[in-house]
Length: 274
Length: 274
Image (cartoon, rainbow over all chains, first blue to last red; front, top):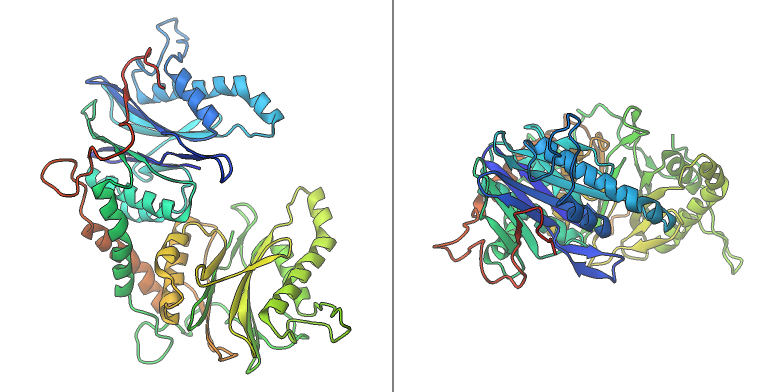
């Protein structure tokens, strides 16, 4: 399995990926799922991949040289000369379709679904930052202010904390911290997501980044987040009052205000349920 | 979809269920998923169901009169005379298998999987409390001190908070609060889980409970949890230091200590990825 998250903020972009792959629980390996494309001053792009590893690796390989024909007869479009992230993502979508044409039928014969999903984001000089989620069919959607992040792979465990804390105004450092908390919760709940982690942080209009780091369990900052988040969550939880069923409280748990019928108990075999 | 959780503590049992069902996103209804069986002083049992609603309702209906033959020729065993929760759960498993025999083939013809999952727990006089997770095949597993809770349905969003906070020593009120936080996170992330909620709390060795409550969005305690948890989580998050990339800190995010190779950037179309 895999867990990757990409976040688009006013201040920049944050990408985080794990590196565990598994074919069953007894064939676990480490493969990095983040790839950074950078031509300083011109473009900075990050690709995160999840799904079938052979498909993901093929997409990454051919993306380097993939070209979209220009219907007007101009120069073909690659990720290296695309004038927008939208066009670069179209190139990625075409790369996925080329792998599909090559592999999908043979995979189907082996009972393997053509399964790959990607997050692709960055900035190309001349336009703002953009973040896309790309599907197995090569189609894609773009992040907006209402939906400032995408996740791929084992996304559910780590979604609530992102839902509650990430907004377009969130700072880059805060968003990186939130992504690490989200990853930490995911790794705690699902063994098939694991370290090392790759984290990339991009500041808007820089067209390059040095904030790339590989994080393993010896990383001092990650260890602090890992150990203190559980404790902080416990303190937050303790600070919410426990329920009081009835009586002297303005927040009773049991109340007559519910619009629905109370739950009826069943006391005998003959009793009807409905 | 559905989200239900059952928790076994030293002090008792906590059960919480939502009540949304959907066949697609445009056919949403309300069905209660908790059923309480109680013969005061003798037995108290709670069943939570998820999966195909027609299967779940059939199981609930026939469970009332389902009987296991006693190979020794004694009185057949029902949930009403079983001498252990293990035997009562065997009766439930047999009820699932009877619905399977009746419906599974016809469902398969319609392309519908035989999909039902249940949490069944309680206490029968003469033994301690027990909590089981029952599968579509009628087989089941039992909660232990290491795994004090079971979830069914849309379980992932709400699992991290349970993983971090629920222990066998947790009090009943705290566990009820934790179940509500877990449900709140799930409802925030998945529209197919929704109110009203049914909450049942059982104190050990009571063989009855009056702590059953239906909770809708007007419930004062739930509203407080719903509004304050996001705020408390934000405060907990803010209290964890933001990352400092390098320099004057004892918790640097970027460090040479990582055992893995740093992520290499790709700068040209010709560059090899591996």
